[in-house]
Length: 209
Image 1: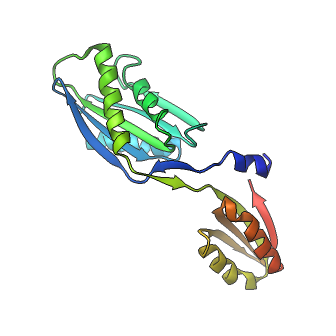
Image 2: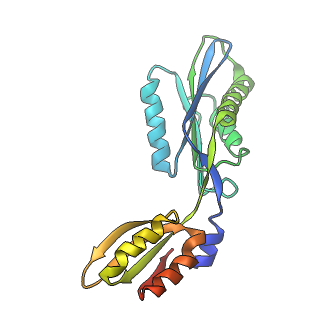
Image 3: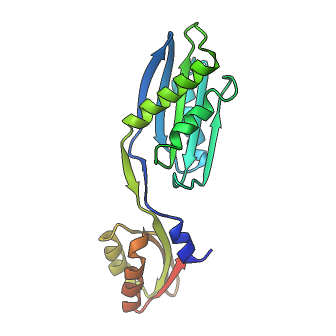
């Protein structure tokens, strides 16, 4: 994929700043909603597994996640976890899709209180629990990062590290040979400035997309 197209697909967006968890009760059924940042499916499923460990005696652990930019997510998924089809996972996902927050996993744990809510009641309860969690959620801006390779003499390493530290970037890895090859990441908006800096050092600059 060309670098320019890739950048256009990586705008800034809001992500969870920290985990939020709250409880909502309706007709003696307890609904515990937990919203957590998840950057991929594996992280989302690990969050689900942790919720099951934290509430092992709950009847249902329903969930939905939205990964990536909320306006054009990379992937979404949901589960009713034993509730009637369409009464839990879909309402949770619907909430996520209207909140303009990406990279989020939302688990709603239910303790059955002995009174059946019916399909409509379940949809309203899961939606409300999800809404409460997302309303209480604090967010921060995700700044897309570029991945680059810098190749040059050993003398470039320290000035390169210093330059990146000042601009929110860093060195991911370094390979030492006759020269060095540094893999770095930094905010997309700083990529052109980095290229100019590296060329000023007499080093080679390559983008990784």
